[in-house]
Amino acid sequence: MRQKLNRFVGDDPAGLRSRPIRRSGFTLVELLVVIAIIGVMVGLLLPAVQAAREAARRMSCSNNSKQIGLAMHNYHDTFNVLPKPGFHNRDIIVNASSSSSSQSWMVAILPFIEQNAVHDQFDFSHSGGSRGFRDNPNNLLLGSQEISTYRCPSDGGRKTPLSLSSTWTFPDGTRGGLARGNYGVNGGAGSATSRTDFRRPRERGPFHFGGSGTPSPGEPYAAKFADIRDGLSNTILVGELIAPEVANDIRGAWMYASSNYICGGEPSYRSPRIQIGPNGNALDDSKMDRPGVCGYAGEPDRHLRCVSGGSRGFQTARSRHPGGVHVTLADGSIRFISESIILPVWLNLLAMQDGEVIPGDTF
Image 1: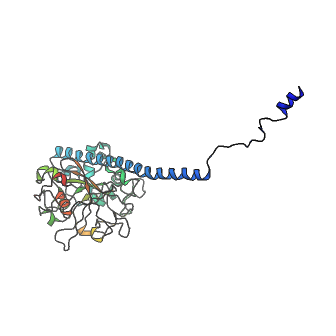
Image 2: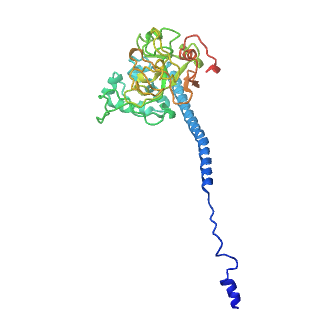
Image 3: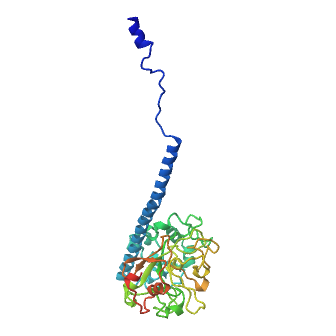
């Protein structure tokens, strides 16, 4: 009996006490291999995720362009003319007597993008422009609101409001500024402010800030669809803009007429003349924007670097989309225009009476 107990208790015949304990896990080499594999997978997946997100943003931006195009058509159906690029008074929205720095076309189409509540609060009894904002702080407050239809998600984040004057104050007395948008009307193949270009069929676009159209010379001009003789499917109505990040750059402030247009370049009487295609590389001095007020003269951003324009102000279509910009054609369709488009073709699309018909497969 004692021998049996010793056999099971004291002798450890199976050698359990002397066996080493095995622990499962990765060796250092295995761990490094796993980390390397994960790194490769992330490197492959991250661009795909970013591309998918940009595709979604681009689709949303295209939808905004479509909504703006439909609003333009509904406005035209109501007034038998497109909205003026700038206007002062409600009773003369169609026959506006304004300078460029007044309430913009974006205010006029608010009821047609389901923003009646904002539009109905505007006071159109003031003279407009910077005086209108100074004399009516409530208009400034309305202009400080971001309108989602006017913003492209690819140019994301809250932008610095436009603030050109210390007299722009909200109703509570605090200093105010105007929210940004990302779309501008087509001011033609030349300058959107040159009457000389407006009188030239090869330059004239559907909108102009100082054309010789009705009711009298020098007033803002908006075309009727019948005026677009090159065809609605061959003429740009609206193009994209990039909203700047500095308060003293005028581009993209949706309420301010001087901010929301695109055009082909300098007036035709200037020599040598500068003309720019979409997303023109602003690091090249000849391809910089020249908006009325510029805050990015020294910045390295190829999209935003610019020169204050004065009488020769112009700005081209720009976007944060890789490779090009969205445009809304006058027939309401949306096209993505490559930034490598041949400049003469781009200018043909901006002009509405130049006699050039561009096949759809060329842009």
